[in-house]
Image (tube, rainbow, N blue to C red; front, side, top):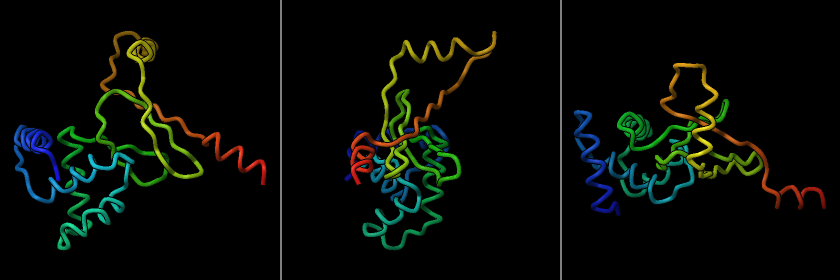
Length: 147
């Protein structure tokens, strides 16, 4: 169940954007916060369908679009793959495991973010930084070489 704090944050952000809180938006947001594994809209649809059998995939997409618009979640894109959704709003990077498809949050020190911003041309300021690492787990590589 979504906590009161998360529900209040959701309601406030939606209200600030001129929108209202709905059970569908609350359920999708709750599912994102519950398992922070960067799911796709299709994966979220499967998760929330049991709690709200009448919800449609289009509604899940609309809820996600609203949550991104209200800066409650981030849309994360890996080349041609489906968009994934991340509720971690702190500055961070992502590591995408090419073998498993899993995505992990990577905390970035403020000093590194400052260095990255310092390479921008004079007068430019970034509103966001997206860093994506791609690779394989060392455990998967070790087991693959033994096979």
